Length: 252
Image (tube, rainbow, N blue to C red; front, side, top):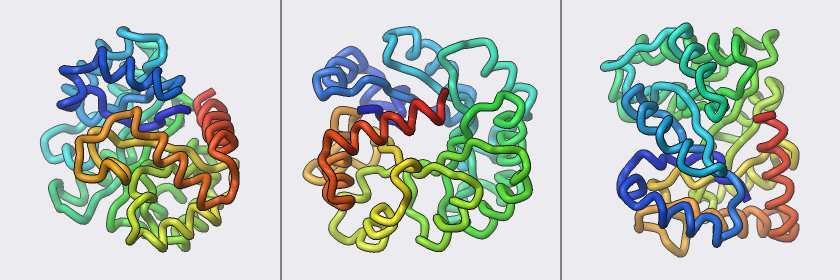
């Protein structure tokens, strides 16, 4: 298994990292991708990726942080190129649900991350909430640049997914697909092509059933894999193989 999106620099994971890594290995996880949310976060990630060969990282500023922190594509590219274990750009995107950051600043930051993704030919990890139209319109502006799009913790509509598939996007399933009220999302993950799906925890957030309400960690990804295999009517071992192969292809 591969956890394509976790936040190992967040507590309570960061202070218990040795045990988190060991439990991940015990659960059969082969790779962990720990995601940057700010430059301060990235400073910790550079240390974390050096702790174990299974851990990789990204460079980026989360849309919630764009009021306080702006990074241009040059800074992102420089940091990306300085460390071979940094393999993606993000977490970037648009979040108009919480209004934690100014809309125009989020859009400006998103475009800078896209430019960095194009320059480095690396995957773009996208957070999109209550912003389907704007997210698609911005990505569509770059449709001729062969963007490597990864929609993290995808909870969007089936119609949004259909549009993104035209841009060759990948979609990551989080623990949300295990929630009993996520009927529409479950239907979307039944419909998505098998070569476009990944799995993630987004830990320490969004623990899957039966651990919902607890602090999440990468080892809990097995529950998301099990639910996805149930939804798609294939074995858990097959879903692990498929999602791992998709990750390795996207991040190759």
